Picture 1: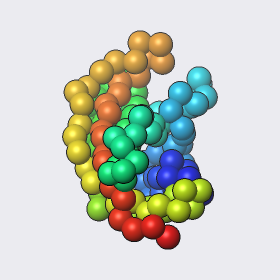
Picture 2: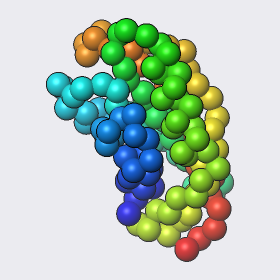
Picture 3: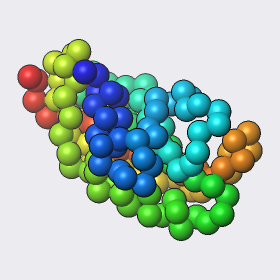
Picture 4: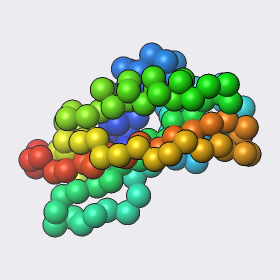
Length: 126
């Protein structure tokens, strides 16, 4: 199982507010009911360092940013300082919360969103 798939599975299993609606970046169905989360693994910081940024995009209806506040805390609780395996590469990673970006409006979907970033640092090779 890839690092991305491990993170998506953990969020689906442990963040009840999204009801299993966690997707790879850009792959959420157009008519999906919010709230939901997408997971993106941008370019690696460096294989030699064993670090990988992880971005979680949180989406909610355009009613209140309080929904995003609560969802952000849930996602951080579920991922921060947790260990994940990437059995495709043999690496194990420990995620650490790094930052939260400001709130934004997804005009195309007519939703509000927020990005929270984690750093997946290599723990040990399995």
